[in-house]
Amino acid sequence: LGVGGRGNRQKQNFVGFPFGTGGGVPSSISNSFGVSLDAAWEVDVWGKLKSGAEAAVADAQAQQQTYQGARTSLAGQIAKAWLAVAEANEQVAMAARAVKSREESEEAVRSRFERALADEGGSAAQVRLSQSDLASGRAELERRRGDREQALRQLELLLGRYPSASIRDAAKMPSMPSSPPVGLPSELLLRRPDILEAERRLAAAGRRVDEARKARFPSIRLTGGLGTSTDELSKILSSDYGVWSLGGSLTQPIFQGGRIQGGIERAEAVDREAVANFQRVVLGAFGEVEQSLSAELFLKRREAETKVAADLAEEASQRAAEEYRAGTGDVLTYLAAQQREIETATQLIALRRLRLTNRVDLHLALGGNFTL
Image: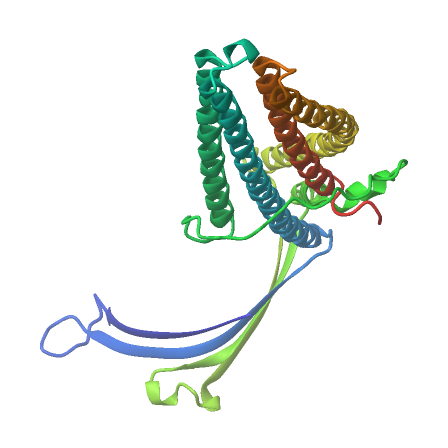
């Protein structure tokens, strides 16, 4: 449907006519005004227009899934950024405890040295070694604080805020949720926006192949118009000057220079590309799930073994400290045990964060939770 208006002023010369005034060429000036309501309808005998409409709907649905996928991806990135902030907070706290522990060991070694108990393990070299460990611990604390500042700014950027690192909270990593059950159905992947998008793209490509093939068939078009036509603008809305028209046409393409065949071949190529892309997306989705499940298994084992190592290192550090203060242990064992305790505790925090991050990846890979 369409509505329009027109206005025209025309001068016409009648060359060769034997009448006129003043010996000049006779002429005529006329005005023409009109408004019209026009309608056109193509009879979709072969379903070509229907195929095009279905392809457009599938494209719109694919775009909706693209939007949903972007939202899901952003949510996952924010969750990971928050976990990074939580880990950074715990690493800063761990580094602060390490500095305090090294301050105590430095004081114990220096005290023994000041009492000139070289024969009991007190020497200048040992004092310098403990002071070096203390300085390294303080440097590590500053590094961890810098990492926390960067993690805060990254989180603020994802939240659409100015990266001023002004978010101050006591975020800590949550406890690990229950493990995913065995035998998860593959239907869970049907919730993934990227798979749904690829499927809709494939559906749209298939409908466009039909549309391109049906372009070889004749098209039937009905047209009509209703309006007015007059030589005076003031009468343009008068029904006395009403005009109307009805028409129909049938057009059969005969020679298009290969345009129709080229359109068919292009649509079929796009359809094959959509099939390959759909296969790639589905295979990639299964790969992400398998990788996340595999990482879950090995990270869980690593965390368990690291927890054992951390507990043993903590106990060894305590025993070494007691033995050194009692005069039955040497300083190198004391400092080495202390360093091992700090390293394993730091690794344990990092592994907890890796497991939680992997759980976010698994959540995204499955398109949501573990159940339908």
